[in-house]
Amino acid sequence: MSKQCQLLETSSIEVYYSEHGGYHLIVADCKVLSPTMEASIVETPITVFPPELRIEGCGESDGKAPQSRIIDLMLMIPEKQKEFVVYSKDKRWVVPVQEAPLFTEESLVGDTKKGIEVVGTSNNMSFDEAYADALRKLYAQIDIADAPLDTVVKNVRTTNIGIAGINILHVEVTGYTINT
Image 1 (spheres, rainbow, N blue to C red):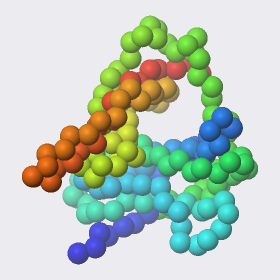
Image 2: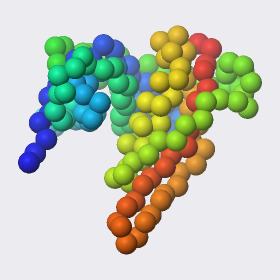
Image 3: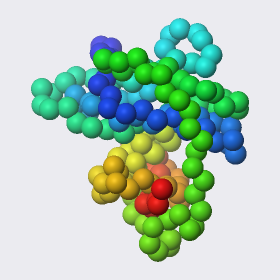
Image 4: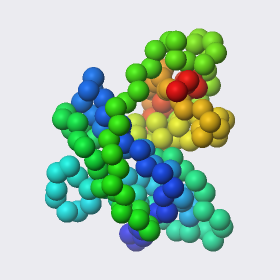
């Protein structure tokens, strides 16, 4: 049985460019229809450059109130783009690209040696999935509207239980709030 996918209601979308890495980071705050619904930013099937994107959720609704979820996508496009077109449930967004902020020790709030440490996991051995799980855990502990985060991936490890066929990717992340 295939998963039912649909465009999701989205309250904000931001796009950042880093000349140091040559990538664009797209971040969206969307509403998922159940805790188990998979939300992602995907390219539209139309071949254009830069790619047009969709905020999409796959899975069943549990009939309860939608929940906010932060999702992201990193695109390796070396040249900075002016804007991206992103489609959500009720809107076609034309999102201008911003320069990614540079984080220095002086921009971190409080003791730079302390932060919130979390571990995200993926049963599919997906780094993106495990990192997104870690971000969800960070956002649950910090009021993100008032405190932007800088994250540091501290460790990536796996758990493999051979005969049972269980493979889990763990991503350890420390999050710091940032002065903007």
